[in-house]
Length: 237
Length: 290
Ligand SMILES: Nc1ncnc2c1ncn2[C@@H]1O[C@H](COP(=O)(O)OP(=O)(O)OP(=O)(O)O)[C@@H](O)[C@H]1O
Ligand SMILES: [Mg+2]
Image (cartoon, rainbow over all chains, first blue to last red; front, top):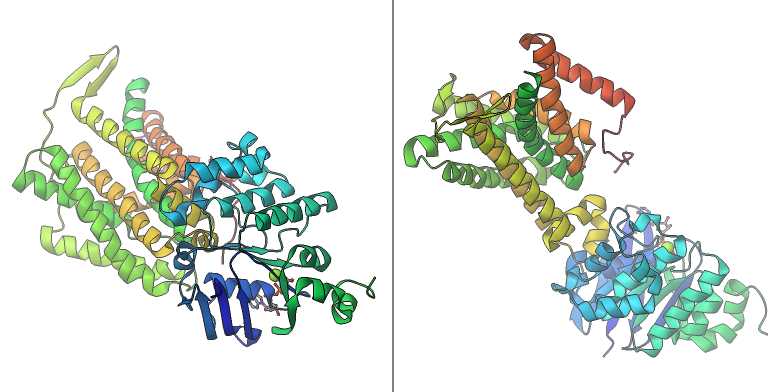
């Protein structure tokens, strides 16, 4: 059974229909990419899964359990963690406090997970007493991912983790995602950088104006002509 | 003589700080003003008076009873004056909380009468001479209680899971929700804590002035607001500092001008400070929230 699935999910903001009857599924240990141009509805889809916005129709299933319409805190406690667009750090808190908040949903501190996160991102150990807003953009994204990981989520959803970062840091973020995949973390990855996302993902869904227009194994999509033209800027190599 | 006045000012300021912390906690979490907070303070004073007069002469018991009662009152006010307005304009609770405040004043006036009520002397009055200063046991108790409560709030916010959840919600409720924080529960915790502090302040003021009446909350509510602005909106250490600053300004006004200019001088000085630092003493730039 899929660890996470959406069935015919629709979301509106007032009159704007941002997500129209979208279905997708994520298997345990998979990296699934959600791609599409600006305004396609990717963030809205993640928000609906996370409970930040209420879907107007459809279902969200976590391990087969219907969690549609649950408020965000219940979804988080059930094991879905969203790193939102713009990172969602608590800018006035220290790095360490942000990490502790990453474990809030678990109900108890997990020192081992905190250590592991700081081993993964040694800069966070150095900066643990620093106020989050004083970190560089790359460090902030590392902290956002670390904060999600210390909660040991069933499903990690990353909304444009490479947004606004220098190319070197974009590669570093994708290396982190690849590393997590090797460790078996289940990931839903929303990205503008389709080429890199398809390289790390197992499968992908392509959204256009709120609908899924293409889906399949990432390698096939990367090689396909339609995706090449629309998202990868050129004909197949 | 000035040193003596400063002692009084710090004591008074610590009480203002307790009220201002409540305002600032609620403003921090909801971005809304609670204009019945002064009346919560007043109810705390009366609960303390009733307990001290009729049940027990133990001041700690009066304090605890007042805090519990006002904590529950805070939850009730949240329920009737704030929750129905979730998502409404951030000025909407001004109307509902002013209404709640009037209801509390009138209830107190109906039950206790409009005149001053003597607050029983629950602390044996001892005077100590410390160099040129005369310090009474009542003053020491008030200052110690206020500082202990402020320390407790500080530790709660800085060190506990629930306290961090309150701060996370104050910073960004949507992000707090994504992290597993039940924002509605945090709002209730915040109202409870804020209101217990106001209730404690009510008992301490009763002890300081030996009297309470149904309208003491009006002026105290304004002072709490002024202190919150002085310290910086939503800033707890700022409220603590602002309280002491206002208390000291008041006694300086009395010392150097006349006691009838006390508030005029203190509020005037606060205006000057705010012209110099509009964000308040410890405030960050205020971000507009919608
Ligand atoms: N809070 C909101 N209120 C109203 N409309 C919104 C809101 N958020 C998004 N929308 C609209 O919903 C549609 C989908 O937006 P969404 O943010 O989900 O797209 P996206 O695929 O994440 O885009 P991007 O790549 O730019 O992040 C857009 O038309 C957007 O303008
Ligand atoms: Mg987006």
